[in-house]
Image (cartoon, rainbow, N blue to C red; front, side, top):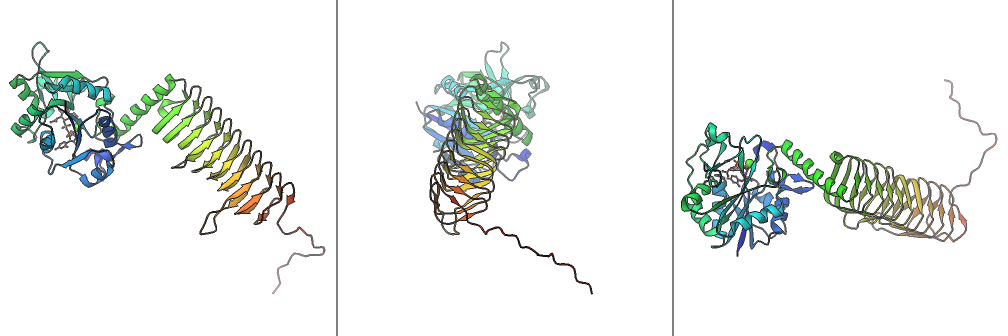
Length: 460
Ligand code: UD1
Ligand code: CA
């Protein structure tokens, strides 16, 4: 049976007080609309139609490769009017699922439930009981409470109706043929002068079409975003859900209220994550690894038993960052794309590593830069040393053999190879290969001048 999904995303979101269209505000690193599109994409729909209006161009450009099609609603005359715009694109038979672009966390299982309840013949509504139902459409039932008779919008409701706690969440699944007919019969004869989608409920009841109201599994999945405060609240709920799932797997999160994943975080058991860490893109953390407080980690794979000290910044971008087993990183380390640290590597404070491979046990403990370098096992790279990898036009590689000691404050002008076991004297600027096993020094010799006098100020 055909399945169409309509996502309403034309509203202005006045209360966000933002130039950005509401559905493009971000939750966990993705726009609200991307969350809904992601859920929609799991349902096997024949067609996903997004209704745009305010900021339509921006919203449409953001959806990229989602496969959704767009229909513009100009001006915006209500939710019923929004779905009317999609009516010509809906299949004649089958089911239409209606979602909201600003309700990002609806569970795929709940959406599936609505589709199954509808099955191309019934009208399925997603409802929830709220302690404070202000602003929502109330679900009107018959005296026995079995049959749903209609939905009354808050502004149109009588005091008795306003006392009802069961509200419509904004999501429904409707049989296509009937939906098209009902949409064509909507009027705007109400307090707000809008075409209400919710009026189709009474039409279904009048025609004898069965109306099924499914209660949502939890409040979080039906909450919409209308203000910055609601966005922040939903963000915390979402993060709490991710934290709970990880803790369930044996990950120790110091404070789930200070934990943020904006992408995918996969953790083995026995991982410790201290407060205020942000994970972006795809991050994997191996068993027994420890992530200290205040770390930013994006697109990285961290092997078991690695220790990431506080304030470490890792951004793998497209190339990724790799941290070997038992490596120690930070505090205040910066790992950039292509940083590939072997087992037991130590990277200390204010050390930057980019596009470089470090062999087992190599150390760069203080204030250093390694860019476009291949560093052998057990190398000791001194404080203040850098690879001068860029000549202003091209990047060049530095190859540092195993067991090399680079003294403090050296400049290694690439392309360059330091042979196995070489020692580079502190303060050297090296622009020719250094032979293995020898001490290479390139700096002015120290001398002392006897009888030298400091200048004295001349008297006038
Ligand atoms: C709607 C429901 C109400 C329900 C509530 C749940 C109607 C008439 N009322 O009310 O019963 O309790 O959602 O949150 O449907 N939109 C458009 N074009 C429009 C108007 C709205 O695309 O012309 C979109 C909005 O961008 C939003 C969604 O539809 O994503 C809901 O619109 P909103 O104005 O928030 O509806 P409510 O009045 O809150
Ligand atoms: Ca709303």
